[in-house]
Length: 450
Image 1 (cartoon, rainbow, N blue to C red):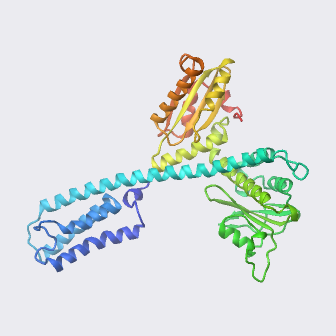
Image 2 (image 1 turned 135 degrees about the vertical axis):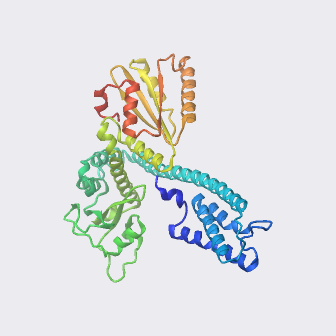
Image 3 (image 1 turned 30 degrees about the vertical axis):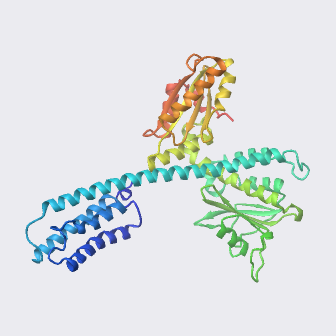
């Protein structure tokens, strides 16, 4: 953790340094004007000069407060040297003020730490909510439209999502140039009936005019096009029916859509020049936007999960993605998570029980089923949870199992394991999980379960 996080919890460094120098000098100046015989109020009923270090400690923590106290000390030496005040050093005055500043600064540090942990947890939950919203909307759209418009749409939504997962799982070395962009355009042409379109990658914060993929002899991107500028400014899909002001130069594009992740990162830009008139309707635009978002999120997921997937190929991308993100939250803000692993004997009668227990997970939890010849291990990653939450989860599972089979987890041969996402990095944590769950080396290299 950076030192600046302790020194300057709020605001810019220049503002903090300026206030640290200004407030104590201002209080001494007021003291010289109001009480010239004792400008530091060392003999007064209340040491008013210490309000400056206390305010600094309340706003910025202990270190700026101590710096303000040092300014008062320097002021005393300066005034004493000029003969403005007596030469006797007020030990109790400065000792009491220093203790007060340290207590107030410690309170501020604790409050700032709690606030940062709460903000990090909220930011993670917001990202998960946006991601799950995409997933649930796509699922609903898939079920509602699965059997409709098969002539004009020869591909069902479920097949489209499966194809997108394959595209985002392309070679990691080509990820910077939007891997699978040609396949994405073909998919959009088949599902959204695009006729002429291009995809452009972002380079240096701006879209590259040269396309990384084109459909129907698409040309270079016109960065000055009014619809392109509007889409980039708004960060959202823009189409011709919105009535975007074009001025004297009308736009040559029908649809312009940024490839944006749930975290707000811009990866590329889709520019559509031709689409059938009757295909340009609200449902098609929503579907196009969602497919682009699914593709962008898949790229980020594969990129973030890549270190874990390289070390443990059997780990599913979603599980590795969430594990890596939670490890970053732990490193940056100290918010811990936990992994609960349930080890089952590999017997036919436990398969149904395992499936039912897997459905008992919380909405934020991510699961991974590891299958070996001798056992089945159900791994549940519980974001932003501690030992109490894991024990509550196990108690709930144990109660449910007793209701179903009149036996506890232990009596059913189910062995629980708890691993904290704390000091041990993700890959080492998974290796530790494999060791305590007796997972053989060959099972760690198998493809993950669907």
